[in-house]
Image 1 (tube, rainbow, N blue to C red):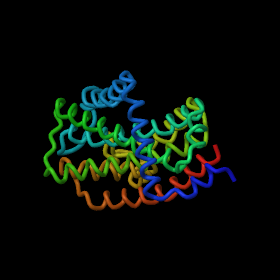
Image 2: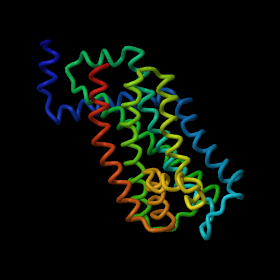
Image 3: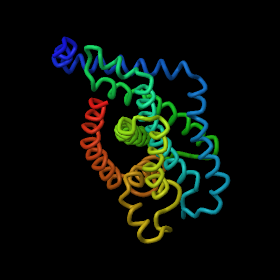
Image 4: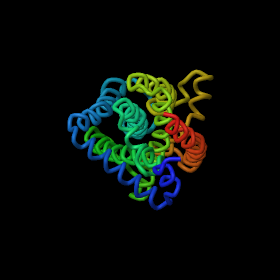
Amino acid sequence: MSSSTVERERISVAEALADSGVMARRQLRKVLRRPTYVIFAFVQPVMFLLLFRYVFGGAIKTGAINYVNYLLPGIVVQTAVFGSLVTGLGLTEDLKAGVVDRLRSLPMARSAVLIGRTTADLLMNSMTLIVMVGVGVLVGFRPSQSVGSELLAFLLVLAFAYVFSWISAFVGLSVKDPETAQSAGFIWVFPLTFASSAFVPTASMPGVVRAFANVNPMTLAVNATRSLSVGHGQALHPALGMLAWLAGLLLVFVPLAVRAFRRT
């Protein structure tokens, strides 16, 4: 057994958290040194918002609620999920460049690479979501609930994004190739996003699709966010359903991602 392995086995929880902080700062510095990446991270969700607001919005019936108020919570959750795909893509890029091999040779907690990466992506996601809400206000979105409810909605979306980052990490570490990771990510994210209540009410969908959409964690996240931000529907049931989904997904995909990382 090498000395680095022995040292790694003796790392405490506090040291593992410190290592994770170092990895998170490394990733944030890397992102901030690529201003074009930061700019384009905001362009895609803004385009989705403007397209659905001004191109499709007039044809979609949402009852008593204004479409832009119906739409923005869905766009915010979609943006969080799409932002989580960066985790898997970034890990495959580090694998390809040999960065992960160098990190694994250091006397540090192996989980720190994944925790640091998901934490950094969560912080980037939070900045993107703030920008999206600001753009939403410019195009007519009007939150109507208390500040506490709005903050709770924001935290729920971030929790959703964080769990999906671990799924993305597992997918990326499993395929080990940036191009494949990007394609594989969109394959599992697109059905969740569009077969949900993010853009249209699920009542307008065919029976089988509606049944899937109603239990889709994306729908639960959107409905809870929508209720907490504009008061459409009740928040408790979808929020509890979403949290149950997130707890189950976290229990499954964190060990899977760590195991996949150890095998790379």
